[in-house]
Amino acid sequence: MLQSKPGGALAQEAVECIAAIREQPRFAPFADVSEDVLRSISSVGEESCDDIFFDVAASDLIDTKSIDSVHSFISSHQHNSAPQAGGAPKRQVLARVAGTGLAPWEIHRPQQFVRDLVLRGRCFSGRVLDAGCGIGDNALFIQKACPQAHVTAVDVVPRCLEFAAAKAKLRGMCGKVQMLAADLLELDPARQHQALCGPDADGAYDCVLDSSTFHCFGDADRERYVAVLGRLLRRGGLLVMNCMSEEEGRPGGPRRITVPDLLSVFNRQSGWEVEVIEDSIIELHPTFWGGKALARLFTIRKL
Image (cartoon, rainbow, N blue to C red; front, side):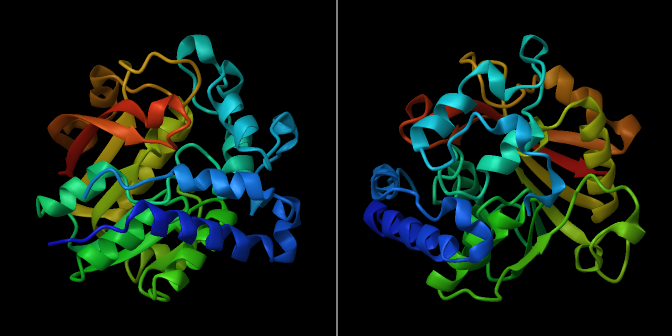
């Protein structure tokens, strides 16, 4: 049976990861994160089994040394590009808070839906891509729980990968998960990270995990993102996507994805088939929205 870490061990690991990262000179802005902030991570429990890409000037209202400031901003309409139209989160905001260990979605454990999928024996075999891996908890869990898989974790914010690498070291998993800084909106294979594409530009992966990535994009960006995933995923491969649903009515957060909206992008005409739609949640820091948001889990096959 799979064993999960107790909340105290996860909290200590999170503190150690932040400490390791803030020792690095290029992360000096986070060097004086208070011990109170570090202690706040101890409330994260186990409930069940380079900023070079972005202009961060627009997000200067966020004090990234304060968990209260980060959570307050992301739970407001300031977080969205067009809140009245269900706009996507501002990319410069995501870039500023991602990988600090304080963002609401950085819960320092794999998401519940990922744990459930592993326990159900679904999806994660062969070459697995964690698209928008964040600080790496899902990717590291899948690799350890599914040793037959070969996991590649990708994020556009290098700081996230530094955090993920620190977690891998603490877990004795250095080198077990391939971690790449890459932009999954880059349509030109020649400009994409060679290690991401593998020896073949098309069909490198058997499964793609999207844990709260798709819902971060506006219309134009998500078209590019889906095109890139379509190139990376082999024919017959699975895309597993967990997105915040329109049933989550609290302000702030990412774009809400309705079923018709999802089906307008993923359909047989565009080369995809949505096989399963399930109610789900997104686990969050317990001080943000009570620790969870309403979501849907989509299992989508590439035709």
